[in-house]
Length: 153
Image (tube, rainbow, N blue to C red; front, side, top):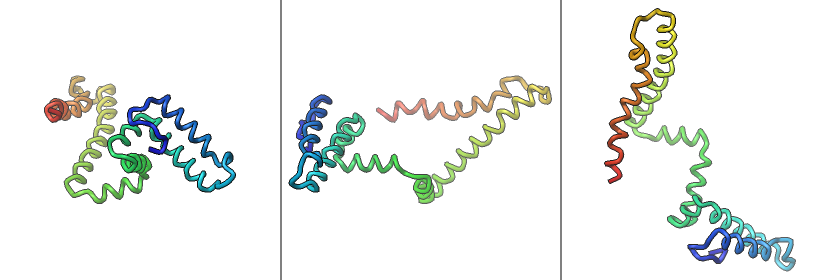
């Protein structure tokens, strides 16, 4: 709306409209009311920033400027906000996260340990057993991955 282009405008049309309006409302170009021009200039720049980025433009087409602002806010979440969000989870989701982190820790310890023990000939296991921690996550994920296409239908 600010740039005055249609919803299906090309990148070239958007760029042309932006340059024209930016030139017209630039604070250095307008002497009569520089403050009003400042706001319009910022609005034109913000509109161009949204419409020139394909991802933001798709968000804008789906949900307007509020969807773009919400998406930008999510990208700027800090660690403290993420941790606060996790603290607000129910106990079942917290337990699932704890189990996942425990499995990742166990994998990161077990794989090098078993590999070193096998190379030192401390254990006489076949390599298939030694490399089992590599295959365990894949085996656990296969049912989920296999059923994922059914969820889409």
